[in-house]
Image (cartoon, rainbow, N blue to C red; front, side):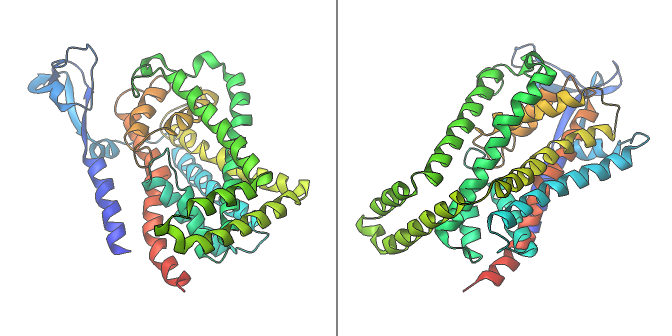
Length: 372
């Protein structure tokens, strides 16, 4: 636990110590921009584009320096408390959904630990992979049959994707789709237009939802057949009986889910929407803590776009891409300069680093509790 917390703390400290540059009144800075790459764009995170100058128009600042200059609005403290509450509701929704899908077999403590480890796995795995496979293992180790665990995780993925497929168009219609995609991000992420990236991610979600729905509710036997044949090779053959048993569990779980009532599914959908709806309120509350926000609906909608785009990020937890895309998406909604970076830092603290710390704390205790 100590090693894990220390590692996460070192990672966070490194990010806070990372220095960038921000414009200041002419002659009051300590650096000047040189446009070394000749693209005419000021890259405030590239130290090679700046040279020391006692009378420059840029100054070098780190995340720690920016945090020291924080000034809350009149109700800023209340907004930060609301951000914490929204983040807690996000996790409460996940925990409640686990209890609903397992018919109360998982108590609150076990649901909390599974949620913490699931989020931890999502934070350390590439965003395009997520923490799905780890979640299946975690639930199975906590006493749920492997095939049933797989079915539960697949159903949660289906419910998550249903939220985006239904909720995203409603929000986009309200704010206007022409305002969702900042033109300055075109070609900036992996050389592709930002709107194209979003629709690729959206179609990916739709295909995933249809595949999961078809597999769990109509063809669980086909999944078992595929897995059993996959494990027929000599070096995997010893695991084949367990995979066949997991396939039987998946079939049983599929039959069980198909027999659930409309009320059961409405409760599961409500828990999912509570979780995801609260997740995207965190940034709005953090921003409102430091300045008046006039475009809350647009900020909320752009977070949905940002999340879909980051689904195809190859980095752990979309780290790096998330910070870069965040600035591009929110530049015209947040004050430029240090405040924009401070909001981004606090947003990542609550939505990323918090789960690294939680996972580092929960994992050793959970391993000890669930060992055979």
